[in-house]
Length: 363
Image (tube, rainbow, N blue to C red; front, side):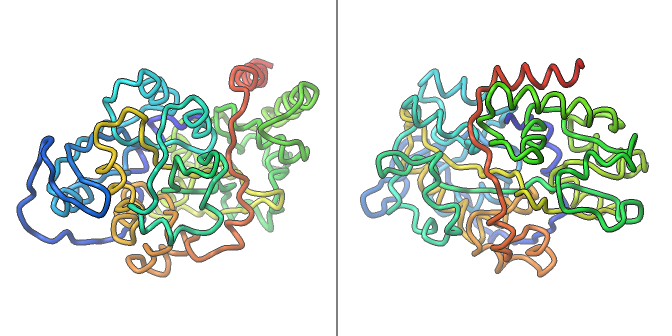
């Protein structure tokens, strides 16, 4: 499922509120010479990364540059499809790329990324067990992607209107809330229908997909509108036009910061969610620097920078040292039962699913 720029751009201001000071000092920039050497790996730069907004906040870049003496250049992504096209060119332009679990396997199978030396990433040992050795990012015993951020996309509701809600995706078909429901305008909404129908969301048969389309067309009659950006849904909730929706944790934190009544449901069928893995393109010029960035990004301090800027959870619970109890709870960083209910996105036959979603919207 493609996550558009709007999702990451708006969450860069998410109110997670982690405050971390970067120590002072001059940041040195190396443009190719050896800047630092560690066992079996010489760090050279600059590090050229293409990332979602919020994954490389300025203080985080500065702390990394100070430690390794190299400059960090970051380009920001518009969508998974966009960055995949860039990496397919094998130009060697980028040293680091994120890939969500519905697309990471494509990088591996097409030989676009290289194995990662986990001996250079000691913080990987602290990753939550369920996010280690993800099948979407491993092959033949080798690791090609290290889990970085993660989230389960919740059902959001206004508790003053939606009383004692059923913890199920089926609530989105509840006619009591007709005209005040909203779903994401994306083919991933078909996965919601699949969860209710107990179909395999990412590998539906032709018959199952056709049934999911009909089911979603029934649901569409209850919707105020489909939303396309995080701000869209925040405004709909804040105005009272919508009281029940599929959403992201970004909207939850934003609505709470505005004192808008909002709560989250964890569906009993399992909660659709994702992990972003960090990968190194096969022709990366500064692979060692990329490995060091991955280690920094999943460290307690480095990961907390990203949690602050993006509003997403981090794969390593070491960040909890830098969070308040409320922040830990909001990010589910101490909730293994919640994590076990996550149904991670997997690759789908995108043209087929997109055509099915178009049928929902046009039907």
